[in-house]
Length: 141
Image (cartoon, rainbow, N blue to C red):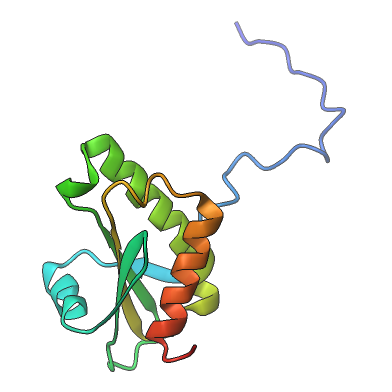
């Protein structure tokens, strides 16, 4: 038995069923995620800028590819798996917001969460910290 169709009186006012935060299949991403250990190690040998809540490492790949790549890491000093995942989720949200605007094309960034700081600090303060670190890495004031 098929259920009856619901009336479609609000057809034009309903939001789309897909998340507006997730990139669409035909929409280019602003950044890609680092997955290989060698990329993390190369960023660790490059420039770094610390703030009270995170450490940001950045390097110019010099490979001609304009894509911004980013990696996220939190050690066990941050806490248990729940605390580490929460900190990384917050760092990913910040990267999604700020890297397309302030990131330098062709660079790799690694965002490292700090113990008890990344997960507890207000989001606006985290945004200011990442913005400051990106400006310093780029050579600005």
